Image (cartoon, rainbow, N blue to C red; front, side, top):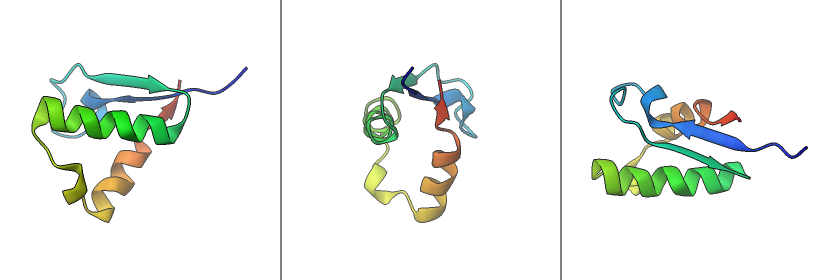
Length: 64
């Protein structure tokens, strides 16, 4: 069986109230969906995320 990956926004510190969740076949696809969610739901600019933020977010992507 192929592994799929997920990210739940409410796992992220400070985003506990957000119900956003993405599931995709690859980590790269999850990243793209996370970035889109950040723009649409939170008005964030993912290009401004520093290396520490990206490293932290990477820990929140889990096999589903």
